[in-house]
Length: 370
Image (cartoon, rainbow, N blue to C red; front, side, top):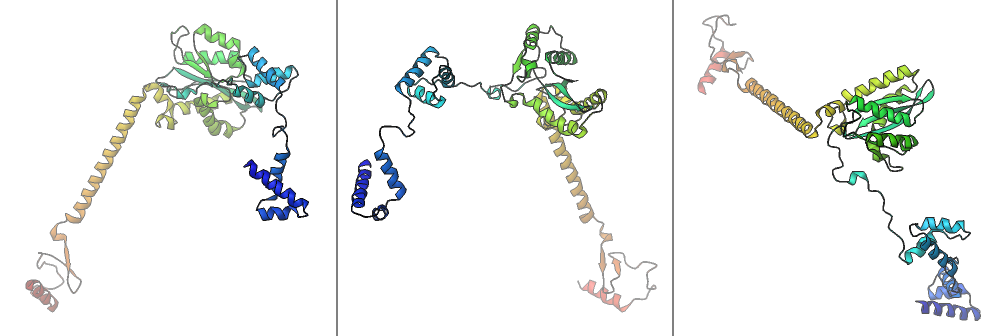
Protein backbone atom coordinates (compact mmCIF):
# COMPACT_ATOMS: atom_id res chain seq x y z
CA UNK A 1 0.00 0.00 0.00
CA UNK A 2 2.84 2.40 0.83
CA UNK A 3 4.46 1.67 -2.55
CA UNK A 4 1.23 2.60 -4.32
CA UNK A 5 0.96 5.84 -2.34
CA UNK A 6 4.55 6.75 -3.23
CA UNK A 7 3.88 5.99 -6.88
CA UNK A 8 0.80 8.22 -6.97
CA UNK A 9 2.65 11.07 -5.30
CA UNK A 10 5.56 10.70 -7.74
CA UNK A 11 3.23 10.73 -10.77
CA UNK A 12 1.41 13.84 -9.57
CA UNK A 13 4.69 15.66 -8.96
CA UNK A 14 5.98 14.76 -12.42
CA UNK A 15 2.77 15.94 -14.09
CA UNK A 16 2.87 19.14 -12.03
CA UNK A 17 6.36 19.91 -13.32
CA UNK A 18 5.09 19.46 -16.87
CA UNK A 19 2.50 22.18 -16.30
CA UNK A 20 -0.60 20.17 -15.51
CA UNK A 21 -2.82 21.02 -12.54
CA UNK A 22 -2.93 18.72 -9.55
CA UNK A 23 -6.73 18.46 -9.65
CA UNK A 24 -6.73 17.30 -13.27
CA UNK A 25 -4.19 14.59 -12.55
CA UNK A 26 -6.12 13.38 -9.50
CA UNK A 27 -9.36 13.22 -11.51
CA UNK A 28 -7.57 11.11 -14.11
CA UNK A 29 -6.23 8.80 -11.41
CA UNK A 30 -9.60 8.69 -9.56
CA UNK A 31 -8.20 9.93 -6.25
CA UNK A 32 -9.71 12.62 -4.02
CA UNK A 33 -7.71 15.73 -3.25
CA UNK A 34 -8.04 15.20 0.53
CA UNK A 35 -6.69 11.66 0.21
CA UNK A 36 -3.75 12.79 -1.90
CA UNK A 37 -2.70 15.55 0.49
CA UNK A 38 -3.08 13.24 3.46
CA UNK A 39 -0.79 10.73 1.78
CA UNK A 40 1.63 13.50 0.88
CA UNK A 41 1.70 14.80 4.46
CA UNK A 42 2.43 11.33 5.77
CA UNK A 43 5.31 10.80 3.37
CA UNK A 44 6.89 14.16 4.19
CA UNK A 45 6.58 13.55 7.91
CA UNK A 46 9.55 12.50 9.95
CA UNK A 47 9.76 9.95 12.72
CA UNK A 48 7.63 12.16 14.98
CA UNK A 49 4.40 10.43 16.07
CA UNK A 50 0.90 11.48 15.07
CA UNK A 51 0.43 13.77 18.01
CA UNK A 52 4.03 14.95 18.13
CA UNK A 53 3.99 14.60 21.95
CA UNK A 54 5.38 11.15 22.60
CA UNK A 55 7.02 10.57 25.94
CA UNK A 56 10.76 10.89 26.02
CA UNK A 57 13.00 8.07 27.28
CA UNK A 58 13.63 10.14 30.42
CA UNK A 59 9.87 10.32 31.14
CA UNK A 60 9.50 6.57 30.62
CA UNK A 61 12.31 6.06 33.10
CA UNK A 62 10.67 8.40 35.65
CA UNK A 63 7.37 6.47 35.38
CA UNK A 64 9.20 3.17 35.98
CA UNK A 65 11.07 4.58 38.96
CA UNK A 66 7.91 5.97 40.50
CA UNK A 67 6.05 2.68 40.00
CA UNK A 68 8.90 0.76 41.61
CA UNK A 69 8.90 3.17 44.54
CA UNK A 70 5.09 2.96 44.94
CA UNK A 71 3.97 -0.47 43.66
CA UNK A 72 0.56 -0.15 45.36
CA UNK A 73 -0.32 3.05 43.44
CA UNK A 74 -2.25 3.07 40.21
CA UNK A 75 -1.69 5.29 37.19
CA UNK A 76 -3.60 8.32 38.45
CA UNK A 77 -1.70 8.48 41.71
CA UNK A 78 1.61 8.00 39.94
CA UNK A 79 0.69 10.90 37.66
CA UNK A 80 0.08 13.05 40.73
CA UNK A 81 3.38 12.04 42.33
CA UNK A 82 5.27 12.90 39.15
CA UNK A 83 3.43 16.20 38.89
CA UNK A 84 4.43 17.07 42.47
CA UNK A 85 8.08 16.63 41.45
CA UNK A 86 7.68 18.92 38.45
CA UNK A 87 7.36 16.22 35.78
CA UNK A 88 3.97 16.43 34.08
CA UNK A 89 2.80 13.28 32.31
CA UNK A 90 -0.89 12.73 31.63
CA UNK A 91 -2.67 9.91 33.45
CA UNK A 92 -3.57 8.26 30.14
CA UNK A 93 0.09 8.24 29.09
CA UNK A 94 1.09 6.68 32.40
CA UNK A 95 -1.64 4.08 31.98
CA UNK A 96 -0.52 3.26 28.41
CA UNK A 97 3.10 2.83 29.53
CA UNK A 98 2.19 0.64 32.49
CA UNK A 99 -0.20 -1.43 30.40
CA UNK A 100 2.52 -2.05 27.80
CA UNK A 101 4.75 -3.36 30.60
CA UNK A 102 1.90 -5.42 32.11
CA UNK A 103 1.80 -3.45 35.36
CA UNK A 104 -1.86 -2.42 35.31
CA UNK A 105 -3.62 -4.23 38.12
CA UNK A 106 -7.33 -5.06 37.74
CA UNK A 107 -9.49 -2.66 39.69
CA UNK A 108 -11.57 -4.81 42.02
CA UNK A 109 -14.81 -3.06 42.96
CA UNK A 110 -16.96 -4.00 45.88
CA UNK A 111 -19.52 -6.50 44.72
CA UNK A 112 -23.11 -5.32 44.72
CA UNK A 113 -24.78 -6.76 47.84
CA UNK A 114 -27.84 -8.01 45.93
CA UNK A 115 -25.57 -10.32 43.90
CA UNK A 116 -24.61 -12.27 46.98
CA UNK A 117 -26.45 -15.57 47.52
CA UNK A 118 -29.20 -15.54 50.14
CA UNK A 119 -29.10 -11.76 50.36
CA UNK A 120 -32.85 -11.43 50.88
CA UNK A 121 -33.69 -10.98 54.53
CA UNK A 122 -35.51 -14.05 55.80
CA UNK A 123 -37.10 -12.64 58.96
CA UNK A 124 -37.75 -9.46 60.89
CA UNK A 125 -35.19 -7.53 62.94
CA UNK A 126 -32.18 -8.80 61.03
CA UNK A 127 -31.45 -5.71 58.95
CA UNK A 128 -32.70 -2.18 59.45
CA UNK A 129 -32.20 0.84 57.25
CA UNK A 130 -31.81 4.39 58.50
CA UNK A 131 -31.63 7.77 56.79
CA UNK A 132 -33.11 11.25 57.00
CA UNK A 133 -34.93 13.63 54.68
CA UNK A 134 -35.86 17.31 54.75
CA UNK A 135 -39.19 18.83 55.70
CA UNK A 136 -40.38 22.34 56.56
CA UNK A 137 -41.66 23.26 60.03
CA UNK A 138 -42.56 26.90 60.53
CA UNK A 139 -40.71 27.68 57.29
CA UNK A 140 -37.50 26.33 58.84
CA UNK A 141 -35.68 23.27 57.58
CA UNK A 142 -36.00 20.22 59.80
CA UNK A 143 -35.09 16.59 59.22
CA UNK A 144 -37.17 13.43 59.49
CA UNK A 145 -35.01 10.57 60.80
CA UNK A 146 -36.38 7.02 60.44
CA UNK A 147 -35.53 3.36 60.97
CA UNK A 148 -37.26 0.77 58.77
CA UNK A 149 -37.17 -3.02 58.83
CA UNK A 150 -35.96 -4.49 55.54
CA UNK A 151 -37.95 -7.70 55.86
CA UNK A 152 -41.40 -6.27 56.49
CA UNK A 153 -40.84 -2.58 55.55
CA UNK A 154 -42.33 -1.65 58.90
CA UNK A 155 -41.37 1.78 60.25
CA UNK A 156 -39.72 0.87 63.54
CA UNK A 157 -38.96 4.37 64.83
CA UNK A 158 -38.90 7.97 63.70
CA UNK A 159 -37.84 11.36 65.03
CA UNK A 160 -37.74 14.98 63.83
CA UNK A 161 -34.72 17.15 64.60
CA UNK A 162 -33.50 20.57 63.41
CA UNK A 163 -30.07 19.08 62.65
CA UNK A 164 -28.61 15.57 62.51
CA UNK A 165 -25.55 14.45 64.43
CA UNK A 166 -24.16 11.25 65.91
CA UNK A 167 -26.31 11.49 69.05
CA UNK A 168 -29.47 11.35 66.94
CA UNK A 169 -28.27 8.25 65.11
CA UNK A 170 -27.62 6.52 68.43
CA UNK A 171 -30.95 7.65 69.88
CA UNK A 172 -33.01 6.45 66.91
CA UNK A 173 -31.35 3.02 67.07
CA UNK A 174 -32.09 2.74 70.81
CA UNK A 175 -35.68 3.79 70.14
CA UNK A 176 -36.01 1.02 67.56
CA UNK A 177 -34.65 -1.56 70.00
CA UNK A 178 -37.16 -0.48 72.64
CA UNK A 179 -40.04 -0.56 70.14
CA UNK A 180 -39.22 -4.17 69.22
CA UNK A 181 -38.51 -5.28 72.77
CA UNK A 182 -34.87 -6.07 72.06
CA UNK A 183 -32.64 -5.52 75.14
CA UNK A 184 -29.31 -3.75 74.77
CA UNK A 185 -27.53 -6.90 75.99
CA UNK A 186 -29.19 -9.19 73.45
CA UNK A 187 -26.76 -11.49 71.64
CA UNK A 188 -28.24 -10.72 68.22
CA UNK A 189 -29.15 -7.16 67.32
CA UNK A 190 -30.34 -5.81 63.98
CA UNK A 191 -27.69 -4.64 61.55
CA UNK A 192 -28.15 -0.99 60.57
CA UNK A 193 -27.65 0.01 56.93
CA UNK A 194 -26.71 3.70 56.54
CA UNK A 195 -25.05 5.93 53.98
CA UNK A 196 -21.68 7.62 54.43
CA UNK A 197 -22.94 10.84 55.96
CA UNK A 198 -20.76 12.35 58.65
CA UNK A 199 -23.19 11.50 61.52
CA UNK A 200 -22.98 7.83 60.48
CA UNK A 201 -19.24 7.61 59.86
CA UNK A 202 -18.21 9.58 62.97
CA UNK A 203 -16.10 7.81 65.55
CA UNK A 204 -18.82 8.42 68.18
CA UNK A 205 -21.36 6.40 66.17
CA UNK A 206 -18.95 3.59 65.34
CA UNK A 207 -17.80 3.34 68.96
CA UNK A 208 -21.44 3.13 70.08
CA UNK A 209 -22.14 0.19 67.76
CA UNK A 210 -18.90 -1.53 68.76
CA UNK A 211 -19.88 -1.19 72.41
CA UNK A 212 -23.32 -2.69 71.67
CA UNK A 213 -21.70 -5.41 69.52
CA UNK A 214 -24.06 -4.50 66.67
CA UNK A 215 -23.15 -4.25 63.00
CA UNK A 216 -23.10 -0.88 61.23
CA UNK A 217 -23.28 -1.44 57.47
CA UNK A 218 -22.25 1.40 55.14
CA UNK A 219 -23.64 1.84 51.64
CA UNK A 220 -21.27 2.51 48.79
CA UNK A 221 -20.58 6.06 47.71
CA UNK A 222 -23.25 7.37 45.31
CA UNK A 223 -25.14 4.08 45.51
CA UNK A 224 -28.61 4.84 46.91
CA UNK A 225 -29.72 1.36 45.81
CA UNK A 226 -27.68 -0.08 48.70
CA UNK A 227 -30.31 1.42 51.02
CA UNK A 228 -33.20 1.08 48.58
CA UNK A 229 -35.87 0.12 51.15
CA UNK A 230 -35.36 3.35 53.07
CA UNK A 231 -35.21 5.49 49.94
CA UNK A 232 -38.42 3.91 48.65
CA UNK A 233 -40.24 4.81 51.86
CA UNK A 234 -39.10 8.42 51.58
CA UNK A 235 -40.43 8.50 48.04
CA UNK A 236 -43.85 7.46 49.37
CA UNK A 237 -44.03 9.77 52.35
CA UNK A 238 -42.88 12.76 50.32
CA UNK A 239 -45.49 12.27 47.61
CA UNK A 240 -48.32 11.30 49.95
CA UNK A 241 -47.67 13.53 52.96
CA UNK A 242 -44.75 15.99 53.06
CA UNK A 243 -45.18 17.57 49.63
CA UNK A 244 -48.95 17.82 50.08
CA UNK A 245 -48.64 19.72 53.36
CA UNK A 246 -45.67 21.80 52.27
CA UNK A 247 -45.07 23.48 55.61
CA UNK A 248 -46.05 22.30 59.10
CA UNK A 249 -46.97 25.15 61.49
CA UNK A 250 -45.07 23.75 64.49
CA UNK A 251 -43.25 20.70 65.76
CA UNK A 252 -46.26 19.28 67.61
CA UNK A 253 -48.53 19.25 64.59
CA UNK A 254 -45.70 17.88 62.45
CA UNK A 255 -45.19 14.96 64.82
CA UNK A 256 -48.91 14.24 64.90
CA UNK A 257 -49.34 14.34 61.12
CA UNK A 258 -46.20 12.34 60.38
CA UNK A 259 -47.10 9.83 63.10
CA UNK A 260 -50.61 9.47 61.66
CA UNK A 261 -49.19 8.79 58.20
CA UNK A 262 -46.68 6.24 59.53
CA UNK A 263 -49.44 4.42 61.39
CA UNK A 264 -51.46 4.34 58.16
CA UNK A 265 -48.39 3.15 56.23
CA UNK A 266 -47.68 0.36 58.72
CA UNK A 267 -51.15 -1.04 59.28
CA UNK A 268 -53.56 0.05 56.56
CA UNK A 269 -51.63 0.76 53.35
CA UNK A 270 -51.08 -2.37 51.18
CA UNK A 271 -47.56 -2.65 49.82
CA UNK A 272 -46.96 -4.05 46.36
CA UNK A 273 -43.56 -5.50 47.31
CA UNK A 274 -45.28 -7.46 50.13
CA UNK A 275 -47.87 -9.18 47.90
CA UNK A 276 -50.22 -6.30 48.84
CA UNK A 277 -50.14 -7.18 52.53
CA UNK A 278 -49.50 -4.38 55.00
CA UNK A 279 -46.04 -4.03 56.61
CA UNK A 280 -47.52 -4.51 60.07
CA UNK A 281 -49.15 -7.80 59.10
CA UNK A 282 -45.99 -9.07 57.43
CA UNK A 283 -43.98 -8.09 60.51
CA UNK A 284 -46.44 -9.96 62.69
CA UNK A 285 -46.51 -13.17 60.62
CA UNK A 286 -42.72 -13.08 60.14
CA UNK A 287 -42.79 -15.79 57.47
CA UNK A 288 -43.22 -15.02 53.78
CA UNK A 289 -43.85 -18.68 52.97
CA UNK A 290 -46.95 -18.57 55.17
CA UNK A 291 -47.98 -15.31 53.49
CA UNK A 292 -47.69 -16.88 50.04
CA UNK A 293 -49.76 -19.84 51.16
CA UNK A 294 -52.39 -17.51 52.61
CA UNK A 295 -52.51 -15.53 49.37
CA UNK A 296 -52.82 -18.72 47.35
CA UNK A 297 -55.66 -19.87 49.59
CA UNK A 298 -57.42 -16.54 49.01
CA UNK A 299 -57.05 -16.99 45.25
CA UNK A 300 -58.44 -20.52 45.41
CA UNK A 301 -61.38 -19.48 47.58
CA UNK A 302 -62.18 -16.64 45.15
CA UNK A 303 -62.11 -19.04 42.20
CA UNK A 304 -64.42 -21.50 43.97
CA UNK A 305 -66.83 -18.73 44.90
CA UNK A 306 -66.96 -17.51 41.29
CA UNK A 307 -67.50 -21.07 40.03
CA UNK A 308 -70.40 -21.68 42.45
CA UNK A 309 -71.94 -18.34 41.55
CA UNK A 310 -71.93 -19.00 37.81
CA UNK A 311 -73.16 -22.57 38.22
CA UNK A 312 -76.10 -21.29 40.24
CA UNK A 313 -76.78 -18.48 37.76
CA UNK A 314 -76.70 -20.84 34.77
CA UNK A 315 -79.00 -23.31 36.52
CA UNK A 316 -81.48 -20.57 37.37
CA UNK A 317 -81.47 -19.45 33.74
CA UNK A 318 -82.15 -22.98 32.55
CA UNK A 319 -85.03 -23.34 35.00
CA UNK A 320 -86.52 -20.08 33.76
CA UNK A 321 -86.30 -20.83 30.07
CA UNK A 322 -86.69 -24.61 29.80
CA UNK A 323 -88.36 -25.55 33.06
CA UNK A 324 -91.70 -23.74 32.61
CA UNK A 325 -95.01 -25.59 33.13
CA UNK A 326 -96.53 -26.74 29.82
CA UNK A 327 -99.88 -25.17 30.76
CA UNK A 328 -98.18 -21.76 30.74
CA UNK A 329 -97.14 -22.07 27.09
CA UNK A 330 -99.55 -19.98 24.99
CA UNK A 331 -100.49 -20.75 21.40
CA UNK A 332 -101.76 -17.90 19.29
CA UNK A 333 -104.54 -18.37 16.73
CA UNK A 334 -105.63 -16.22 13.78
CA UNK A 335 -107.48 -13.89 16.12
CA UNK A 336 -104.26 -13.38 18.18
CA UNK A 337 -106.17 -14.37 21.28
CA UNK A 338 -104.26 -16.65 23.53
CA UNK A 339 -105.71 -20.01 24.42
CA UNK A 340 -104.19 -22.25 26.98
CA UNK A 341 -103.21 -25.63 25.66
CA UNK A 342 -105.47 -28.40 27.16
CA UNK A 343 -107.60 -25.86 28.97
CA UNK A 344 -110.78 -26.52 26.85
CA UNK A 345 -113.79 -24.27 27.22
CA UNK A 346 -113.83 -22.37 30.47
CA UNK A 347 -116.62 -20.54 32.15
CA UNK A 348 -116.44 -16.82 31.79
CA UNK A 349 -115.07 -16.97 28.26
CA UNK A 350 -116.01 -14.26 25.76
CA UNK A 351 -118.40 -16.64 23.93
CA UNK A 352 -121.53 -17.99 25.52
CA UNK A 353 -121.87 -21.67 26.20
CA UNK A 354 -122.82 -23.69 23.16
CA UNK A 355 -121.97 -20.92 20.71
CA UNK A 356 -118.93 -21.36 18.54
CA UNK A 357 -117.52 -18.89 16.10
CA UNK A 358 -116.46 -19.86 12.61
CA UNK A 359 -112.92 -18.90 13.50
CA UNK A 360 -112.84 -21.40 16.36
CA UNK A 361 -114.26 -24.11 14.10
CA UNK A 362 -111.56 -23.57 11.55
CA UNK A 363 -108.90 -23.53 14.27
CA UNK A 364 -110.21 -26.79 15.75
CA UNK A 365 -110.25 -28.45 12.39
CA UNK A 366 -106.69 -27.33 11.79
CA UNK A 367 -105.52 -28.69 15.11
CA UNK A 368 -107.34 -32.05 14.56
CA UNK A 369 -105.92 -32.39 11.06
CA UNK A 370 -102.45 -32.24 12.55
